[in-house]
Image (cartoon, rainbow, N blue to C red; front, top):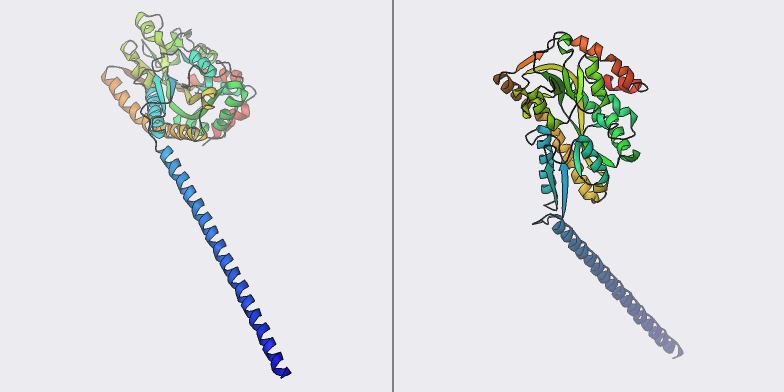
Length: 372
């Protein structure tokens, strides 16, 4: 009897243990399921929120503007039909497109906002937002970057392709950094090369002897004036806007420009002799005021840099083709396009300028010349 009672008690205890165990197991399973549901709910909620944010970002990126929120002024000293001015307008179109109309750039060609020096000074002040500047003239503009004067040395570059490679290499990157950091108050976006500069006059120039004694219009720049003197002529500083009438009235006998400038400004009408001296190849920089640059978002800065790269690449692809067409049109208009008989003498005459303006930068000049 006692034995039976013991068995009953043991069985009851075991049953209670099983019930308790099952109850705890069920509770744990229920808790686990609840936690999983909660976690799944949280994850789904986070994914929904992220999806919502992504949709909002996409919506914002795709937003178009009926009227611009930011209007910038782009100064260009060349005439509207000039290739540099056309590049500026192409840049403006790209910015409007890539910002969906939020930013509009108004281009003012034909020196409407002043000559090169006036424009650059206003760029530093933020009164003008953008321009195409010439790094070789930065010292004249007041920038404390001594080595830029080597870019003005006659016959520094072999050709336009050589100049493009130099400006898109270590030299150009160093200049970008120095222009901004050394109180330039401007930012360089990219570079392009508009063609070799040559002399034109109201009389044929076949030799350096033909050049002697002529009155030649030059930019207000020390290197240019020294160069013309070295070739035996008399330099006459003058604004671009005054040149056509000065040629027409005989105030000057000639000037110098790339083919595009000579053609687009119609200087050939009053000065029909173009001599291929190719004495200077000047890189140009697409430049923005640092004050304007700092108003842009990081995304907008990337858009500006991308647009500048696109415009300069297209410019270099088409400039030679356009020049070839212009040369044929000039010949058809009666212009005499002259290859110099004594090119080496011009190079030799300019050598003292390299010694003067390249002093202390001999290694840099050698590096530029050795760039392939």
